[in-house]
Image (cartoon, rainbow, N blue to C red; front, side, top):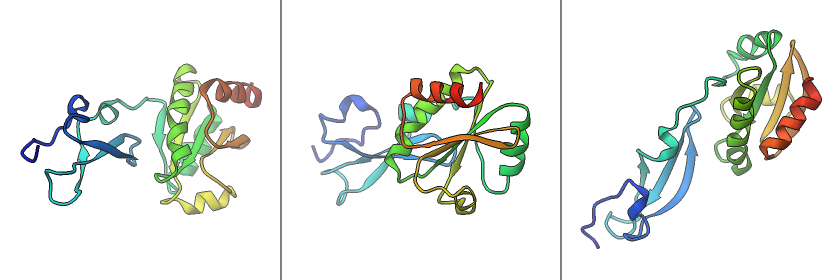
Length: 169
């Protein structure tokens, strides 16, 4: 067992004692799975799993990352033409990571009528303060430079669609 190679595919994980210990979302929105390899590395070294399913997924064309410098142009000015959902999230926030797939599914279902901007709050605290965010995740819907509504916490896709229809249409 000590000579077993480090496995980067899920098929052998349980057989050779590898277990996932955490998911990490990068600034580009892709997820990386980190694994603990007990027994055949010195100590309990943490190794990124580079070819995981999560990191190989393509990002939706309706989802983009934005920071404090680009917020005015990419969100507020762009909201003149179409509604933009802004997801204020953090890497360490489990509900934030749970909400991301539901938001991406919902935005994809609208086929480009609504865009999703993702703001990582640890790097953009000025924006979080400006919009007086009290918890994460917080999602705000902007259209024509105005905030139409907001919600906090993880929600299902169908709930988000109903919420959008209620506040936008």
